[in-house]
Amino acid sequence: MYQLKKTQLVKSDLETCWNFFSSPKNLKEITPDYMGFDVLVDIPEKMYEGLMIAYTVKPLFGIPMEWITEIKYVHDKKFFVDEQRKGPYKIWHHEHHFEETEKGVLMTDIVSYELPLGFLGKLAHPIIVKNKLEEIFDYRFKRVEEIFG
Image 1 (tube, rainbow, N blue to C red):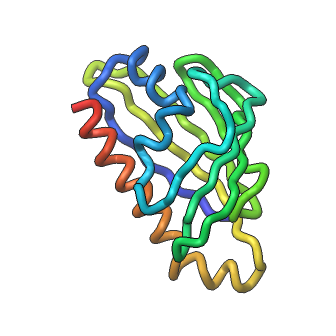
Image 2 (image 1 turned 180 degrees about the vertical axis):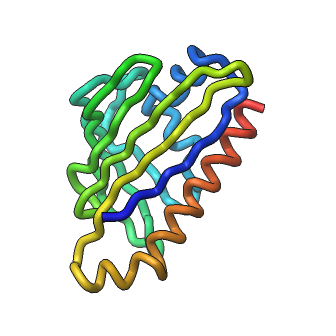
Image 3 (image 1 turned 90 degrees about the vertical axis):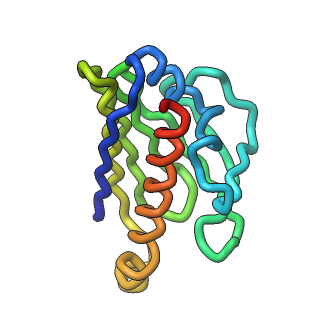
């Protein structure tokens, strides 16, 4: 299993930051265009435990695939967790943590994931997958800076 951990200080109050990130409708706004992210179902303004979100993504080589995630846990203004139910990973567990500080909100993402295909997945990780995830989270970091100043 692999893990990616990213932190970012968001120049915002906790309420505003939480409202933005806890709305599934804002996910497209912080996802690179080339990922071809399209939500396939009606989604509410606010997430809740058990919410299933189906969307199309093009994570590699522009090939579209359906990805379904479930919002597994929500602790208001503290954290939420989404887990893949269908998609490119064998396991995908994404924790989103929020901590109010004097300078803004410290946001921490912890993604624990496992790739399919055994040995081939292990080969693909350092060559393709790790770099692609870093690229996606780097884009997200920049977009959050733009959105929140």
